[in-house]
Length: 172
Image (cartoon, rainbow, N blue to C red):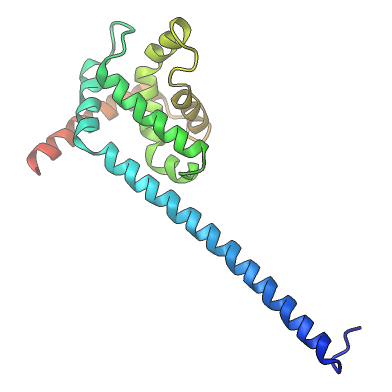
């Protein structure tokens, strides 16, 4: 039993309580900082995704779809490299996968459907790890998606990307 009459016991209890509360506070602050860092990284990725170079590359990929060869164009490479970077950020916990999924899963699913055959060709002929992060991210996010057919989504994405470029031209 705890002896409240002894001042040393009371002081020890107060110290233990303060240390415990301090530890809880520090752990909570670390969690909050990690979430804020993840959101900051995702904001950066969203800003980059909607910036001119990637928007133009996405438009060009849509214009060239379906591909008639397995040659990776600079536009293909730019979009795939961006999504590879996103996969790397998620892998090292710089970006939360659930937050990334909520914004990028649609694009990852469709752009992998459009670029996947070319990437897989490069992986089999040149380097097996070529855009492996993008491929794995696609696999992981596809498991979290609704399962709606990709073919219809590709047509929809092509129209949406055309409109996004038109919007950017009109409002710049």
